[in-house]
Structures are given as C-alpha cells and as structure tokens.
Amino acid sequence: MAEIKFEKAMKRLEQIVEELEKGELDIDKSLEIFEEGIKMSRLCAKKLTEAEAKIEKLTRNQKGELVAELFPVEEDPEEDPNGKEE
Amino acid sequence: MTASSPSQPAKGPQVFTVTELTKVIRGVLEVQFDSVWVEGEISNLRVPSSGHAYFVLKDEKAQVRCVLFKNYRAGAKYKPEDGDHVVLFGRLSVYEPRGEYQVIVEALEPRGLGALQKAFEQLKEKLAKEGLFDPARKRPLPEFPWKVGVVTSATGAAVRDILNILRRRNPKVSVLLHPVKVQGEGAAEEIAAAIETLNRIEDIDLLIVGRGGGSIEDLWAFNEEIVARAIAGSRLPVISAVGHEIDFTIADFVADLRAPTPSAAAELAVPLLSHTVDDLRQFTDRMMESLGGRVREYRELLRRLIDRRFFREPLQVLAPLAQRMDDLNLRLFRGLGQWVVLQRARLAGLSQQLTQASPGRNLARLEERRAHLHHLLLRQTQTLARTAKERLESFEQQLRRQMAHGLTLEKKRFEAAAKNLNALSPLAILDRGYSICLHAGAAVKSSEDVAVGDPVRVRLARGELDCKVEHKH
Image 1 (tube, each protein chain N blue to C red):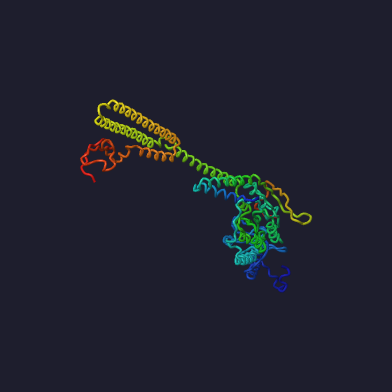
Image 2 (cartoon, one colour):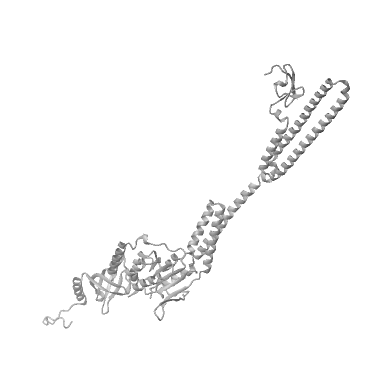
C-alpha cells in the first residue's frame, strides 16, 4: 500500500483516541492531534474502500518466466475437503 | 499321497487321516516358525463382531492369511487399514477346520514409519540445535495483510479452503498462489523454491505454506530440511498449515505460526474485515466524542466565567467606589459650609472691630463697605462652591463613564484625584486631628502672634474651643 501503512494508521488513531480520552492535553494540542486522528481515520477508510481483492496464480509463460494470472475459485468444492491431494 | 511312502510297500502306505496330517503340519509349522517377521501389504481386512481382525498380507507374487486377535489389537496405537504397507511379527499356525495356515499376529507397525520417524527426530534435533525453532525468531504476523502468498497445490482442497475463508473474512485481501507439488519426488524442492520466489515479490505481506491431510509419507515434503531452511530464511512471516490438527511437521516448528489446518491458517492470517471497520468507526467516534467533550467543558467554563457578577453588572463592581465618592462629596460640601461659617465669623469679628474702632461719622460708610465686602464674600463663596460642585460633577461624570468601562486603571486615577481634592479642602486637615488656633480672627502661626493672657479660639473638625494663652514657649 501507499506511504503510511494501514496498520500504522490504525495504531496511531488508537493512540490518539487514548490520549484524547485521558484529557491531559491542552486544547490546542487536543485539536492538533484530533486533526491528525481525522486524517488517519480518513486514510484508513480510503484504503479500505480502495482495496480490491485479486486472486492470482503464478504460472510460467512461453519464455519460462513466472507471471501472475487470475485464478478462478470454485465456490463449492465437491470433494471431501480433508481428502488427500493430487 | 500315492507317492509319499514308496519305501514301505510291504506294510502298505501309511495313511493319515486329514486331521492327523493337519496336526503334523501344524506341529512342523509352529515349531519352525514360532516367531517371524513378515513384510507386506494389507488387504481384505475385516473385523467381525468377535473383535479379532482378519486380513491377507500380500506382495506382488504371494499372499498369506493373518489374524490379529482382539487382545493384541486393543493396546496397539497403529490401526491397520487396507493398502497399508506393514511389517508384522507373529507365529505361524494352521487353522485346522479349513486346513489353512495363517500368521497369528502379535505386533505390527506401518513399514517405513520407523525410518521416517528416525529421520524426523534427527532433523528436528539438528535444526533445534541451530536455533531455528527459537521462539525469539518468530516474527509477529502483520495485523492487516493486504496480500497473502500461498504455497500449496493448485488443485487440492487446501487452496480452496484457504481462498474461501480469506474471502469470507476479508474480501479485500488479495492472494497470490504459487502452485507446487506437495508430495512425491521433488515436492520439497518446489516448495522451498516457491517460498523464495514469493519472498522476492514486494507487495506480499505474509505466506501460508501447507497442504491438506494425508499419510505421513504424503506430508513428508514438509519434513525436509530444504523446506525448513526456506521457511527460516523467509523475509515474510510464514504460517505453516500442514495436514490436520494432529500432524506436526518440521515446517510447523520453523514457521512463525503453526496453523492446525489450511482453513485455520486463513483464519489466523487475516482479521475479519467487519471487525476492522468496526474498530475504525469506534476509534473515530470515540475521538469525536472525546474532543467534543473537551469543547463542551471549555464552553461551560467560559459560560460560568462570563456569568459572574463582574461581567453581568460591571457597575455593581464599582458600587463601593461610588459610595466613597458620595462620601467625599458630602464631606466637601460640609467642609465648604464650615469654611463659609468660619469666614462669616471672621467677617463678624472684623465688623465688630470696625464698629468699635471707628468714629460715628464713618459708620455709614463703613457699614456700606462692610455690606459690600459681605456681598463680595458671599459671591466669592458661592462661586467657589459652584466651581467645586462643577468640578465634582465633572469628576462624577468622568467616573461614571469610567465605571461604565469598568477600568481599574481609571479607578485608581479617580482615587488619586479624589485624594487630591480632599487634600485641597481647607478643613480636611482638621479631620485628621489638626486644629486651627485663631486670635483676633486670624490664624495663629507663631507664638509671637499672641501674648500671655490673650484669648484664642481653637477650631476643631467639629466645634470650637475658647481658650486662653497661659504660657509661651
């Protein structure tokens, strides 16, 4: 993902909430970190909205290079999921 | 039978009954093969209600019947199944009713397990010594992986389980599958190479390496050193997911996290999207609430401050000041009145002196002059009073204006002005305990001004005293 990692943003947001709830900051600092918190919150929401799942499978092309191609997933596996493989 | 006893033709051939023959054979077999190891594959296994197990042990060319009696079966950990390749220990016997020889099995174990088990233990010990299983090496999993690399068979149940669960928990998570052979020749090498390949892809957050359930041989690739080393060398955190809950492989020991099954690996790998969204919403709400609370608090504090009397009725704060001013005002007028009285008394004294001192002819003129002086004096005192009053009123006006602004500086200035004004009053000094000594209508400023025996009048703040000079110093 982009500049700030989603989990970092969530962590920071959580910290900000805790600091604000402690109520030990002056109003200027409160407003400042509140603004930062809103930024983090928007960032997380944006990332969640933007994230798009892709299911890919690596295969070799004619030149023998590994390439990712979309991998179709069957919704309803009929065989015993605990069965042996291959 | 015909050819069995050619050496005794005279007595005729020795004829066994079937039972006798069987007994003899049984005796021979039981003595000769009272403890044997036999290796082969189990087939036709059946366990009737008696609880004994019957099966046929076979290889490519031959087969032998076997029986595993209930009491031997009970304690054994290994439960044989058709198709299992086993080594068994027992003795040979004959089942007489059917003339069939069979192996009475006393112990059996799956073939190969011993060797694999040994290899497993040896590798485990070696890698443990190297510190590859050290808990300190285990890396935490990313909390919100966006892309998960999966190393498993593209056709097995494991990949479907993983994909289904990942999608169910978090449809935003991408998956990159590196298909590999998970059993048989070359599987371990493929798995190791896949782990290395995926480690070179930048946007992957986490690897799941595994396969579905199978026999210990099926899972063996995950017990190979090359796989263990690939996992240990992985830049990305690795979740191992091999077989079922009960299966432990070397890969499980090296991985950052062991999942009991591929499905469980998917569950451990990603948080529920709904939880993440809830967390985000909750954080945001709490932050809003918390800051909103602060703002409300401050607003309330400000309201309480503004609500104080000082702000609501600023003039009220100046009430004591106004009172003091009224008091000064009053004293000024009283002082002025007293001054007039004093002047009048002086005038009366002068008039009397004048009357006494002047001959009768001048009386009318003197009287005229006196009336004129009196008139002047009156006018003068009135003017003085008016000026003082005007000045005072101007002060008062100024003060009111200042009070309206509620300025403390002005208050101080007023007080200073009022003090000066007070000091200007000729009688203010009397209020501080001083007195004026008068002789012949004039203030006595020096003992030279009077002689012993002279009457003097002492003017106090309130009232007067008539005294006589007794001594001079």
